Length: 112
Image (cartoon, rainbow, N blue to C red; front, side):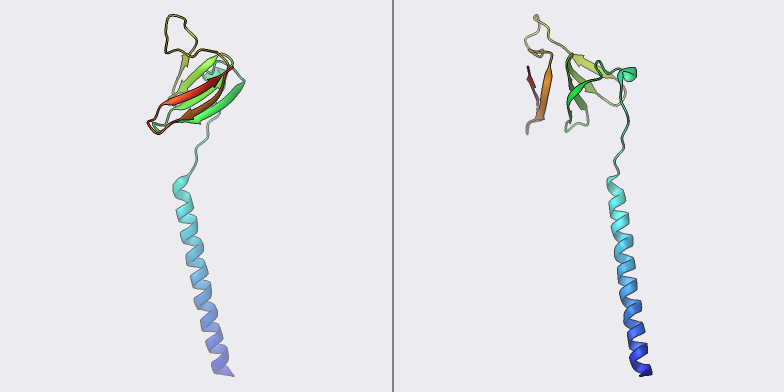
């Protein structure tokens, strides 16, 4: 009877150790992919408070589709892309409703 209790305690200690190690490793692995979030508003340079779409590209830039054009945010400042009849590469419309990045890293957007 004493041997049975000793064996049982040993198994419990082993299982508790295994579970503890698994939990510690899981928590450490989960910490590698921390997400940082920062509120961005008109005060930081966002041209509109209404944003229809957001996309982070492969270079890390954040792109925002608004009613006043397309905005690129580099983490410090915004660059605005608006319709310019003199520039054939400018957005055709100012209502940017969708954003996607293709395999070559080109940002495509849908307008209204």
